[in-house]
Length: 281
Image (cartoon, rainbow, N blue to C red; front, top):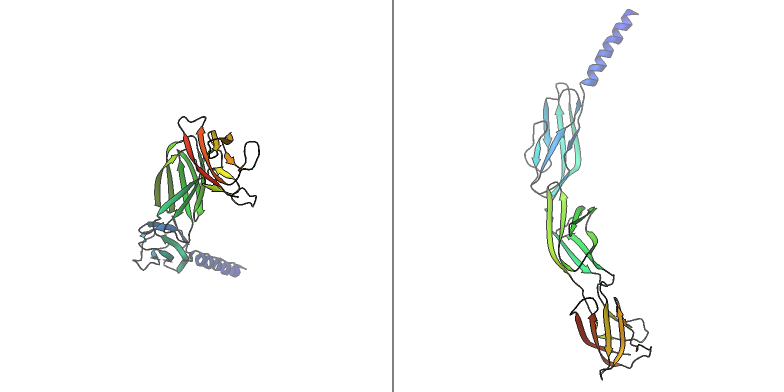
């Protein structure tokens, strides 16, 4: 019985020493996405036996490292595999993380914008994108008139913003591609009451260009007067959305020909627009 206890005692010591003499190699990076020239902090998280030697391979063909927690700088765009080999007096083990680090080019940001002109406000659509984009997502941050809006993990971004009044505004778009890796683009916008009118329409009920529509921001009220070639008013309308179906104010369809229109604003002094519209049946 005593002999058996002694054997078990030594076996227990053997297995305890065996277990603690092994190394479970682990590591992480403070980020896995950077731009060219960026640096990454790697941290050894190995457990088990006491490690005396470290061998880091960063996958970019540059100098390896033999310290426990190195900082490595990546100079070129690409996807890199990183490995750590840790050694104690009793064991050696290697941990490899395939395609672990993604190095990108610095983003070249830009955006376009369009006035909706069909909604009752100073509402604009914005489309932000990266000119030299790759297949990885980006984080986008908009700044409209001191209002911030963010959208992450997308290839491009769509934003809508309603400005409070007509005027001049700065709009910023910030694109982030990784740690310390961003680009900012700013544009100056002039938000105004826009009036756009076609020069021809055909009210023949074919569903194509049947109505003379004056595009505007829909914020202010306007007066539309339509004259025939003798100078008589054939149609008049006061609205925020101006349109004419080719009929008189009494509903009579007018003949083909040139008509003259005049637009003024009841709310904006001195605001006028005039032109010629061809009615074709």
